[in-house]
Image 1 (cartoon, rainbow, N blue to C red):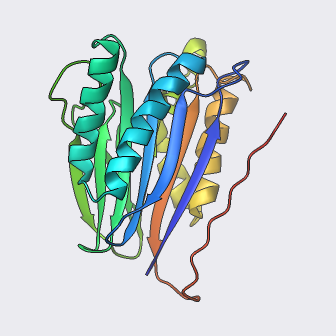
Image 2: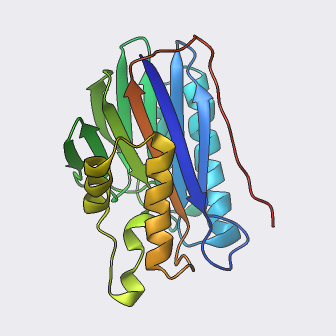
Length: 234
């Protein structure tokens, strides 16, 4: 098997900085973790908050701390630093080679979608963002790694797209429509969802948007690990 990870990310219209921060870190006992945070509001202040949260989580994961404990520690740090007046959403998706599972930790009201073959499940259990009070805990979901498994997580800019025009984005239907028509790569799916959101906002995103797609598939190549990145600079 192999795991493919794709990201599509765009700033809020006319904003020079995104309040969303994403990092990928290797786990000390094997595997990778994707950490995605969205600071409250937008721009430079939101970026500072999301970067603080991600750096805290990444440093703990790299030391072998469990995902849920890392999320709780980041929440307590944010609460202490901002006196409970600033929040930040957090998603952690970890490919854990020790347990051969995909572990999803969510402190984000936006759901996570899990796709198995033609079935799309919405994981939308109530979840609180970090920093609003002490003892915030993530919603944890653990999935066995197997070919065909796909996970989509995102910041709330995706689900808010189109609201100002009275045409809010239906993320679940958008995912299902693309999966019914083809077998998209993770990057194709991430790009499609982001593109749909931008179109609903008439080319002027009302919020920062980040989409992460993780797919497990049968491996038919070599054992080389690869990563690519595209960073447009205006």
